[in-house]
Image (cartoon, rainbow, N blue to C red; front, top):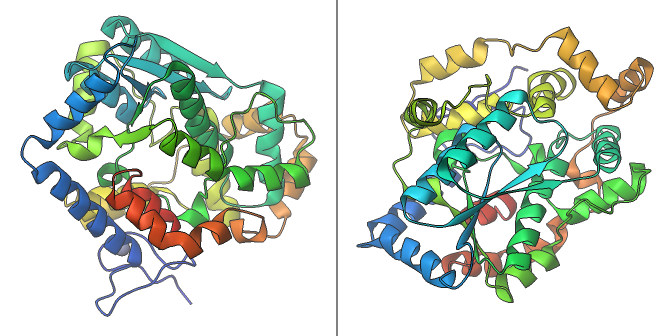
Length: 375
Ligand SMILES: [Zn+2]
């Protein structure tokens, strides 16, 4: 039986968690609508964005920085940093270096922080430790191949914020422009990291900034740290942002979404489609499609273009992971698993989803958390 596709976005039944309403519209589109409604409500309050900026300034008034901006060298995070500074904030840029940066990412981060005169802190994770963790996730045979990086970014930002006494973490994530990755394709959780590492890891985790639910609660409640997805509060146009960054900072493009990182390029463009029949571009293109920024025909056309991943890039990644071609072949042949096959925070979080909802309504967490993990 062929895959059934949502009548509004590009997601289809290759996602086992997809559900359709009577009009053939999927649950992820409904999530998109409720997040849109949330941010429309937020922005519609008179002076809402100014008030947020003022709050951030006041919270950091006697400190060296009033916020942290996580930077990857990609469009969204670069633009978030640029915008934060234009709003009069005093950011500390933090980059999580997982050993897979492209030259473009490195030069973009350097150019933008130099020209904005923003301090940059690079959190470098021990390479052997991180490589081992990435291989552990490959052996776990789950499509969540970027969980180590995404949890690492989150953990590094939280740790630096707590250490520096900074209360606001600004991110460039935007569900309008790139959708929200369904949890079965990217479950982000410290307990998941720990359980996969226990089963398949060989190098102890020492420098990896793992973050468990308890840590998130501690930092949120005791340290008052808040995540601010700044671009969701603005009328963010990714193409225009790209042009502006290129003009102002000599920003360099790097191809597809998240291709500023070599491993992401290999994982999203080659590994996921071949082994798991997962094409994350369906998520990234569905964001602008739902928001009416691109047409369905255009989105379909873009999806039809095979990712441009060379054999050399694939061979390079396998070598860098210190896997032999035979090791890698056996990894590719392993039966497919999901995050549900490992210990995660799912069973602790879901029974308390009403509390998560309440915490979102009170502004402790972003609505993406609820939509992604509790729906
Ligand atoms: Zn949909």
